[in-house]
Amino acid sequence: RALGLEMNVIAYDPFLSPEKAEEMGVKKVELDEIFAESDFITLHTPLNDATRGIVNKDAFAKMKDGVRIINCARGGLIVEADLKDALDSGKVAGAALDVFEVEPAKENALFNHPNLICTPHLGASTTEAQTNVAIQVAEQMAEYLTKGAVTNALNMPSISAEDAPKLAPYMQLAEHLGSFSGQITSSPIKEVEIIYRGDVTALNTKPLSAIVLSSLLKPLLSTVNMVNAPEVAKSRGIKVSFVQSDDASDFKTAISVKVKTERRTRTITGTLFGTREIRIVEIDGVPIEVAIASDMLFVRNEDKPGVIGKIGTTLGEAGQNIADFRLGRMIEGDEAVCVVSLDAPLSDEVFETIQNIPYVVQVKCLSFAVKNEDSFLRKGPGFEEQKSQAA
Image (cartoon, rainbow, N blue to C red; front, side, top):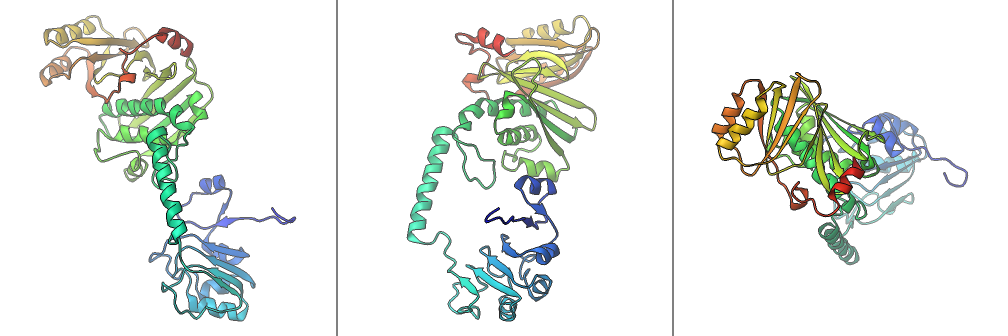
């Protein structure tokens, strides 16, 4: 809005959803409506077989008399001979170009037209621009290496220098939640819902979602990463959704990963005790407190006497030292879960023995890349106090 006039922005993009357009403050329309309704038309598209000559004599015929055209995208999007005819007839009142069908544009029929403004297609080719770009890239790399900030990345969400230290523990939590969910999932994934509750909702959750998806899919696809994970999920028909809520129930902050497969729906919830201590606090509705370790054993079993004792005895007889042993159940006699932290990976023989224990429903060996600050052994001064405040 300027000088009492209001500008309405409409846009055409076949890959832009109406919801995203609304978020950007524009109205998504079809291409013919752009031509028919616009007073100013600007082009912001790459040049390919689908866009070459997209603005031509047929397009000009659909436009308002006196329309103005701006192309700072790619030469070849506009048919220059048709633009000249439209300028000569007055159909186009004015045009501004810095890109041309043939570059460098030493000669062009449009040059010197009274209703055309044109400049060379320099981009970042001037000496000053090259210097500024080099400085900017160096500064952005320094920000990433020293503070974890990601700026102007083409293929991943941006992270500000202010958000980076706040996000760091959540990024590790997101990785562990996704990895835990992926490693205990045995059948094809149909849907993934990532739920943010409490304090985490005040942060930029886009990179967290990318990390959850990446670590969730990695047990099945070794080449997946946080950059390509959303597209990989989409290409495999996995529906991904996100939910945010100010209410974190019993915790100040929490992230839940709900995975729907062909067989069942499973939810894993994690939180931070204090500011950095990562805990899994719920598995399929079962309250439990699990710290992530490098080697772990996940067991789902019927809640019957003797099952836990046999698991412990089997591990002891095999020389497997148990670092931590966590149990949980919802209802007596129903299904229970058991998560064991081990000092070393489990052998195939011991795994098979545990798998054959009566009333054991599922057994999974889990492996995590654990940093020192993630270990449940690193409790330090004030840990219990932080935990009680967070819970």
